[in-house]
Amino acid sequence: MSLIPSVPSPIPYEGPASLNPLAFKFYDPTEMIDGRTLSEHLRFSIAYWHAFRGTGSDPFGPGTIVRPWESGSDPVSIAKKRMDAAFEFFEKIRAPFWCFHDRDIAPEGSSLAESNKHLDALVAHGGELQKATGVKLLWGTANLFSNPRYMCGAATNPDASIFAYAAAQVKKAMEATLELGGENYVFWGGREGYETLLNTNLKREQDHLAAFLHMAVDHAKAIGFRGQFLIEPKPKEPTKHQYDFDVASGIAFLRTYGLEGHFKFNIETNHATLAGHTFQHEIEVAAAAGMLGSIDANSGDPLLGWDTDQFNTDIRELTLAMVSILKAGGLGSGGLNFDAKLRRPSIDIEDLFYAHIGGMDAYALAFKIARKILADGTLDEFVRQRYASYDTGFGQRIEAGAIGFRELEEIALGAPEPQPASGRQEYLENLILSYTAPRHF
Ligand code: XLS
Ligand code: NI
Ligand code: NI
Image (tube, rainbow, N blue to C red; front, side, top):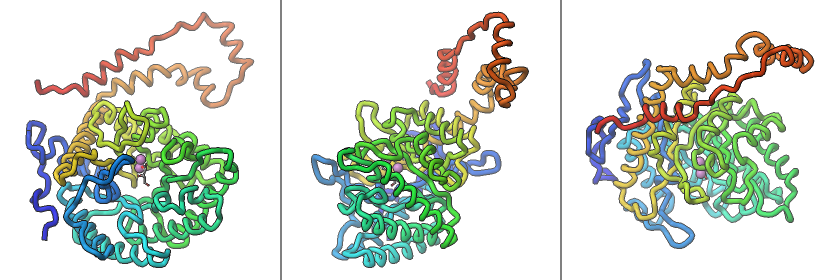
């Protein structure tokens, strides 16, 4: 029995000329590119929390979105029906993956033991739905931020008993992820940060966070979870200062505590911009360290200073991001997860389809444009030329660490004055425009 009868069949691919709002214009999941389907290249994933737990509530008012399957008296039965609807959506939107927090899929009970029991029931149900549909789990995670017990953090809570509770919850969420064949496990530091240093021992909190992550690494070994661990940086919200501020501070943290071999990064567009960076910057910083893991695909609002988690149809931003992702060799076991939600007045189930169709089409188009940019090679060649003086002679010896100040001084004294070369930014911006400009008018 269909729970989403108003969208009767899977979303078709109709090509760029189509005006059908319930069709893909650029995303043909079956299109073969370099021996793999577009679906295998892009690895789209649906975020359970936004798509199926988001109600449109905000600090000024309650939810606006009412779904027909959200009725009944037994929370576990509702959760199962909701999950049936979710998998119907995953199939119709043709996403190969989904992602969840433990508390998204199963209701919290009155004790940890009861919560675990609920989770077991929903993981079993999810396993059956995955088998029936072929949809796979990109990653799992634990919600360590909604319940008031975590108001002062989870692994960074000043109370060790909360640390223990969080450890138990992550242990269980990792086991659920393993059970469902999850390819990654994400740590977003929910409330791992502080509001004021007046009550905070920053050093101890960071030590505790590192201890927590080491325990997770040990537990993965113990249970045979071979998925990739991912840190998802975010600079602020909910706490004023989050410890995983951005990719660069995340790398420093992981290296400080000897964790760098076990983690990569899940980069979220809106978190990058909140940190004062571009999306592409965060991708490049992670890639430079060999730690690019996965993407939480969304967008912020340039006029608002919080995590608005919008669907992203900015082709220029996505093209530049895809150029960096492709140059880094892709996302490996990661994917493009739509950590994005409907605006509060977008209350119909069709809106959920429109939102994801736009997000998927935009990424598919950006992927194709980025491939063209890289294949043409003009951009790459420009950058290569710009650094060519390091390819030979003393430049090469600088990179090899085979020369020092004394010899460089001799070279500088003996050579003619260096001549500045233009950075050609406007020329390069026009080059990108020539790829991203619409051509059909
Ligand atoms: C919140 C985060 C969250 C993570 C998963 O801002 O983006 O949704 O992706 O815990
Ligand atoms: Ni996210
Ligand atoms: Ni976010």
